[in-house]
Image (cartoon, rainbow, N blue to C red):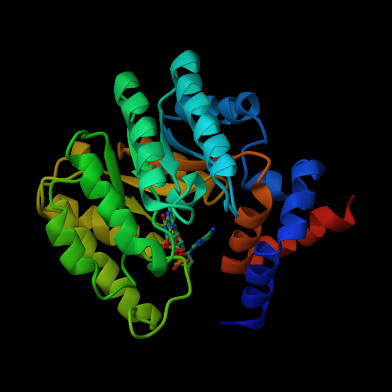
Length: 302
Ligand code: FDA
């Protein structure tokens, strides 16, 4: 891991800075990639996306949940956002991290919380995506998904192409709506590919497998090479446009997002919001040095 990347990952985990940032409002250029700290400002961004033919998957940001009280608070905030999607009448669904609603506190407690969320979403006909976190949480996330799928069909998860086991996981989830990504965490070579080219090749392989299964495929990447390959593949195989979509993060490659939607592809933007913006923003800085220049510019111009 490069020095800059490690530095920003370390900053993202600093609890004092995380708590402090909640009181600052969006700073250091974070407003470019985080859609506000409250529901109303986030919804204005979602409406703008919708006006460009783009849907949203909304993430109520939250980190370091260690107690039942914090997990319940996070669950309530997610339920409130689900209701707001209804009230504002926007084209949006939600992305949820299970650690935010108690996965590190107690498995059964977390399952109960996500059941409540998925049940509420089902009443509104809203899809819930279980974001995939690090490898330590993977099996539990898949176990929770399996339990939810017994009662609901408005739920899916994320498969990370850098993991050796992902091809097998995809085979077991053929009918399920899946978001496919390269993978964002630092994982050991025992469980994951380390070489960028190998990860990209495996990513395309997994995308092609799921595109040809009955489950809906969300291809979440900013990589134009991958996007071009997918476009060619779906054309060659006559894969219907309503069986897949592209996804990107809010504030990244905004023009390309609009262009893909204009070309007729379904497109969803991942829209994070909330007072807990700091760790999310530090991880984005760690991923992409160009963002650091932006942050520094905004810092010195204050
Ligand atoms: P990558 O970072 O490999 O970049 C490939 C190439 O694309 C670059 O070399 C450059 O040429 C171009 N490029 C990339 N970004 C650009 C930019 N901003 N401007 C111009 N060119 C650019 N991960 C995870 O583990 N669990 C999860 O649940 C999710 N969820 C998720 C949702 C969504 C909507 C997205 C987009 C991503 C995730 N991820 C994720 C993160 C994912 O695993 C991955 O870490 C990042 O998307 C970075 O990889 P990319 O595929 O975007 O391209």
